Image 1 (tube, rainbow, N blue to C red):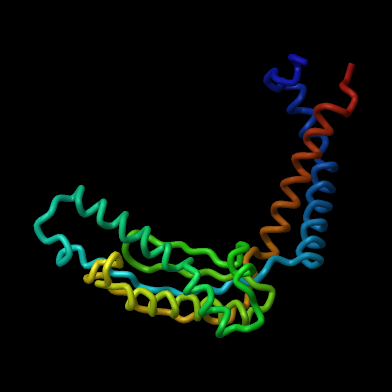
Image 2 (image 1 turned 180 degrees about the vertical axis):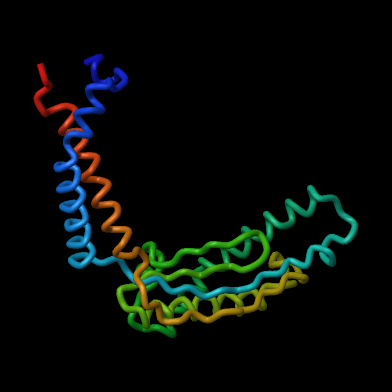
Amino acid sequence: MHWLFSPPSIDDLIRLLKAWRLWSVGALVGALIGAGIYYLAPPPYRAHAIVLVDFNLEQAWPKETDRQQFYYLERETRKLEEIARSDAVMESIVETNGDITTQELRSGKLSLSQPAEGGWHFYVDDENPERAAALASRWSQVFVEQVHLQVGAAEGLNSFIEATQTQAAQSPRDRRISLSTYLFVGAVAFLAIASFLVLFFSPKPE
């Protein structure tokens, strides 16, 4: 079995180059299979809304050290993430969009991407582009409402935190993963398979 881990020889490289027909056919077949998968089981549409979160560090910690500011950002960011995925927020989305359940929302349909301070991106994946946009807009809107309710409250958020919805979600025209990605992955996968076949299963010259 040591030959599996030995470095390729010049002969191996020559065999690969001579098998250019197999490479071409493999890339074409792989791309066609990728396109078939895309159309038979297309990825969902992805919509996203943006909320601007401002921690106002200069006012919240005017005389404190960088280390204390870091822990402040980490603590408050964790609280904000918990709010974004809280039962209150999920239930409010369900009440507005009655054709979905809390379990569906928590099953990977929603995703959140954000820095410690700045634009928070609320992503929603759905087979229906209009519903994806409606859910993303509602999710970000309810998040802002909950932040306003909890700012300055006991055991809530710091009173200097501000959240503003800066971009409502638009109905997406493209799916989350493009057709070109499926074509590329399919072609690369079959090129790898073709290389494996040439190196390990094709007869070696005497």
